[in-house]
Amino acid sequence: MSVVKSIELVLPKDAIYLAGSSIKGKMILTLNSTLVDPIVKVELVGRGYIEWSEEAGASRDYSRNVICNNKADYVHKTKTFPVEDSILMPLPTRVPKAPQAFYFYFIFEMESCSVALARNPLLVEAEEKVSYNCCRQGTICLQIQMEKNTFTPGEKVVFTTEINNQTSKCIKTVIFALYAHVQYEGFTPGAERRSRLDSSELLRQEANTHMTRFNTTKIVSTFNLPVLLSVSSSTRDGEIMHTRYELVITVHLPWSLTSLKAKVPIIITSASVDSAGCQSSEDGVLPVSPDHQN
Picture 1 (cartoon, rainbow, N blue to C red):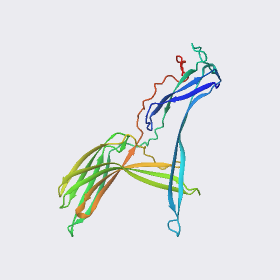
Picture 2: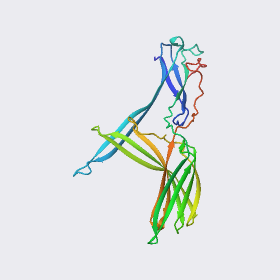
Picture 3: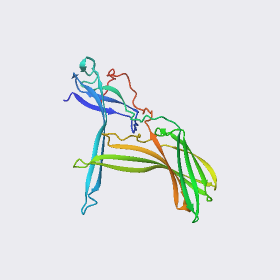
Picture 4: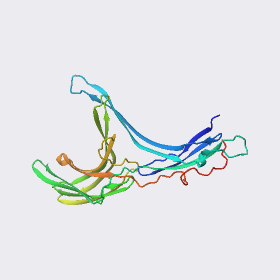
């Protein structure tokens, strides 16, 4: 009969952990008999793996698909529990040879991986000279103001858009969209470095406001960021992916067959969130719980 009957890890059900949060749980060690000189530890390992295929030799007479991939270890933490007198001994129970459970509680603090940036007011401007009605010209000025451009997942974003319409035409539609750009870094089987950029739209708002000619209009907009967002990251050696975000404001000018865009960089940093988990006690092995029978 094995000395160790079972090992069970208990974590909060359906928990989602963000950068900077804590992982709380417990390990239940059930013994059939005495365990001498045990080493009891829990390891948290987080690995990333990416893979994609792309066409090689497209400019030649022949081409083929190659697989690009990469991997990296992001998290490796260990919690070792001291064992009193280097022995785990089942306590006497009313049932002979009944298995005895020991409870070990642990907390892993996740690294924030945040980008340290000053949260200063931000001002972005764009200007476009447009032609319309064959020979007429005018200017559209777009200005975006934000108190800050560094946020945490789930936070509210507030910004003001000012449109100076120096044309004889009205403006009716302004689109606000938040984009995520993820760049993946990988290698071919021949160790050639490759990169891939994927962009996706996370949020979109449309303002249908009648902006009169030769006038300035202000629009105050708000939206809540998604709760699940990767933190912004810069390009560093050894990383398999880098994420950046931008808020794109587009003024549609259908009467000139063009549009005016302004792009605002958005920084996502780690959330100061402590995910709910099992209630912890002091480090180390806790006093033996009441009799635990399976």
